[in-house]
Image (cartoon, rainbow over all chains, first blue to last red; front, side):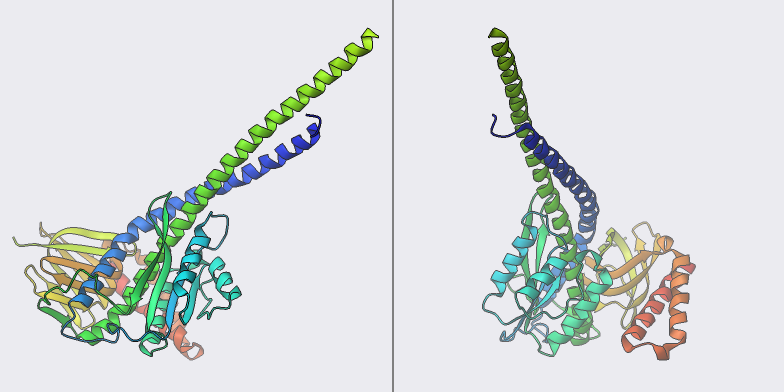
Length: 281
Length: 136
């Protein structure tokens, strides 16, 4: 008991307590942000899904016409849009999505569009070819930014600057579960449910003009959807991480309090023994 | 009376999900009206007014900008970028946005092509919205 002084233990308890206060506050902030982000996800998800399914259906039933967006070319260069967070302290959130992105890109000639501070820093530090770092803060990217980016990417896709476009993001499964995922958005492809008999469909004005108008919208919508999911995931991951940090701090504090009380008791016992011994002689 | 299933989804949420008798929207080519038993159809949307007539015959108007319209079987899906019901449009805000965009366009020689395009798009959107709001 005498090994650790009471003062040391007291100091450690105090520092643990301030850490706990910080993690507790961060958890609360994340929880309130999570609620807003979750609302956004539930609101935009039907849009996201309808858009994706409709375009997939069109791509599948597209026997009668061709479009540069539909052709799968030989892949010389790929473009990856990677969405991660702006800040750390969110458990494995940033790490998981970046690891998945790097595994996907391994051995390919890639160019990256990073969204989120952590992501920009990571790809810059590792010497990847970064197309633009205009999307530094994932939290600040608006719907119109997504559409601007989408139009830009579609233009580059058409000129052959790259032959495929993927989005790497984190899917928001629930408050406790977030799943990093990759989605191939260009060239367009069917859902893989087999070729449907190409039913009679009217395309207006004509398929080519139509695709030129729709595909940027589709890409913008998907980027926005992936962004909403990622932001909700980040807050969810942070809330969980901070919750467990707070619990750990509590555990350590109770452990240290026990040690402190033992040391205190030990000191008192020793003092009594000394007094008794002194009076006996 | 015949009806079809209409679903209107936007990034801000689902705006309509149910039966409807007719749907009028402005596409890139001009206004079209979808009635029940329409042939499969796909088009891109322009900027303009949309009108939905529900099964009870009530018509509702909205500002509808960008996106696409798809009809397959008796399912009609409207996937616009912006869709605001006329009674929910903030007419004052639209009016302010219009004034701002016009102000910007009044000295257009100072703007870059990109800025000019943004200001013009803003003006168009504001005009559509204030136009729809006025005609409730």
